[in-house]
Length: 162
Image 1 (cartoon, rainbow, N blue to C red):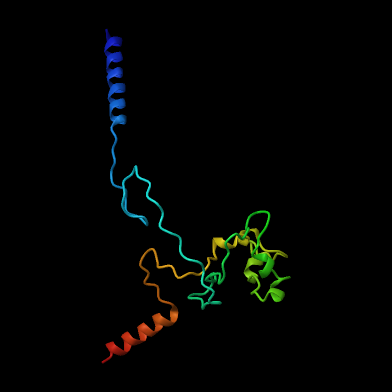
Image 2: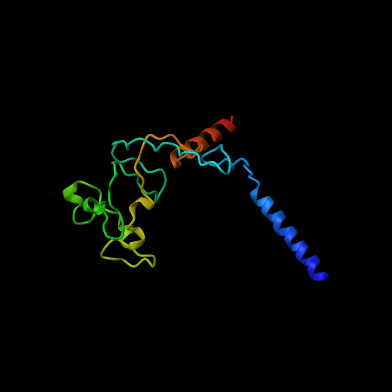
């Protein structure tokens, strides 16, 4: 008799699980960079930013900031077999191409040993460098570079002393 009770309880749990699994819940999705929608919906991604602007080299905002790429890189091959960026930015070709040479930091491995070629850690350029564009920021940004921050501190100091 015990086995019959256990069997019927197990069967009831299985049926209840199937009924719950068939209920279609469509909770609202968490708002992230692509707000709105539900968990079952697949909303389209926002359109990509326009073509990069050719404005030349820009001033860096902080030390060790990776410079942005001042030209288009669409269809550039950067993979384990080839790196199109190095056709202009390598030591051998930079002067002829009129392009800045890859930074000396790219010729050191993770143990700070100097290498003859670009380190495998620094080979995939778009890990750090991105094309500059006129895209609006995805999230609000209150970043101040050092000069702006020092000017703001000086204003506060002058205003607070009166």
